[in-house]
Length: 456
Ligand code: 5AD
Ligand code: SF4
Image (tube, rainbow, N blue to C red):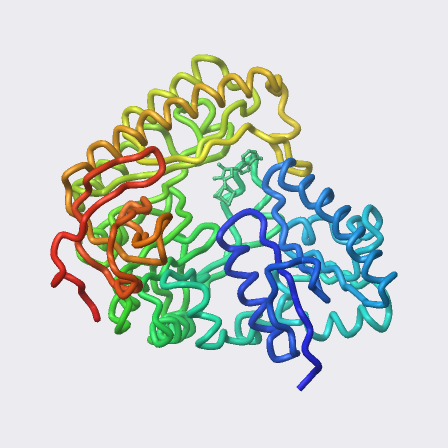
């Protein structure tokens, strides 16, 4: 056993990074590292970075400036602090990071996290190390599983990565370059991880991947299984009450997956389905491979399979060549779908992607103005959706103590936080809650019946 050291891991960007950060912590635990939420106490600082938009990337370098000050102060006090940069900026920029931020000791790409202990030892001995390879071996086989205590501390809802990478090559997106080609994990490994989570008290699993519904991992029968079959298998894991998956591409919504929404009661009726734009002209230039009508047809088929289905999406404003007319098509799509929620972004030109080279880049002030209007449309739809929840009774999975004493908070099937006055003993349980009030970010409700807790 090594001497005890502290690691502070800071995640930027998507849920995949949150999952990866947990797995890095699990892999460092046997090396004597315990996690700390306080960066000043850390012997090792890991920044798990995001490269999706320029702003995300800039955040990393300003954060590294702060870390350098901490590192120098610790050195003056005779303490060595190691700084590691992981994630997609690490993958995309490699040694450029050390050139711009010489206090960095290690740059490690997302496919090499299982090598962290060895890389840290080498960095200590030989100075800055860069590892951004795509190794042949499966990192998931080598990453340490989390302890029961670590799982518990992370809550009753957990992410499990089932695939990584993307082969879609949307013209604005860096993911196919930073996370590489689509690769799916085998079913047995995912099921084993779900069982381990359930054993530690997890009640909800979200299967994650950059293009999760392109999943085609090897099943126990040696054949590729689609996501629908994987979901049905995980639904059988004892203790798992709820399932979700994210993020999906509309073109990979196969009939079997739509049917899963009809057939699996534990599969939540809420789908994040990024569409990016409501204009066919823009969708084609984005290389999204579907039209507005295809998307609306998909939504209709999902609603036919599960009438209480609701949707969230991602939208980009100011894609090169986007006219006012194109933008208005995006606004009208939000209303036509009645999105329960959505993320919206100003287009950010990423070096090396085709859209960065397109003519007719949109001025910043036009992007800002469109983003403002888009967000207003989203907020209006979210408020209308929340208002429609009033008086309905939802199954809520209680997650933690609420905002005020005596309150606990859980999530509705639609991921809305629901605050309820109830005993903490409900945490980790699913119970019916009647919604009595809808705020802008949370719902408030009452337990429908004290006897209703399911899955004790
Ligand atoms: N500029 C703006 N938004 C982007 N996204 C991906 N790449 C870019 C970019 N270059 C958005 C998309 C995607 C989400 C994760 O980030 O909407 O769905
Ligand atoms: Fe990026 Fe998603 Fe398009 Fe893949 S499908 S290139 S991850 S936006």
